[in-house]
Image (cartoon, rainbow, N blue to C red; front, side):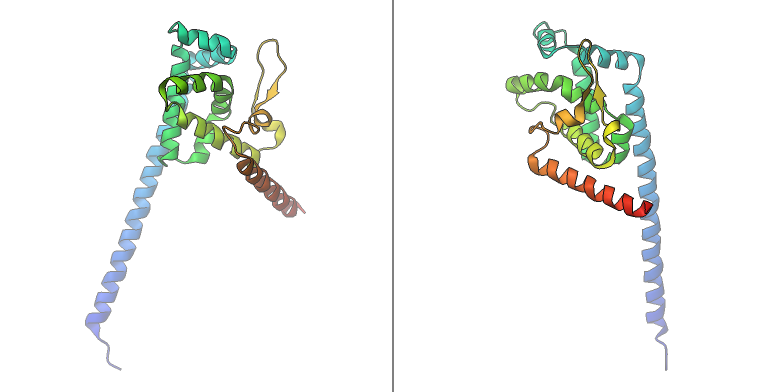
Length: 204
């Protein structure tokens, strides 16, 4: 049997090229992951400054009526700062600039609490402006679905306002059809049930 050495050499060269391209692709992917992780950490650090935390605490304590009054008096800078940060986070996550699960775990209950407190404010601004804070809403939705699927109920996001009992926001907001349709809620709980069943079998 005679070998066609030119064909063999071509095959080997093609194989080396493919392996080189695969290696380069993995390198680029890892570099991008590293940069994106740095970006989400920077956004997180910005949200944890003293000023940012004070803005959140101030807004969380107010009623919908007070928040609307701030807008009418052009005193809603804290609200806009919170929504701007969340909108940027929601956009970057939806465009896959960084890992969604990482963002949800890192920012925890912030998008959920913010949506709960600012839902009426956001709806009012949409009536005035049209499109407004859509990515805030979408990121809050994904955060709620993630907690339903992965967290025990005693770890679901809560909020206590002055003079009112503590509320489990996941229990409250999963009924919000603006966030979750009945089908989405059913799917999230179905995945939670399957996950729980699988975990029980692993422990058995």
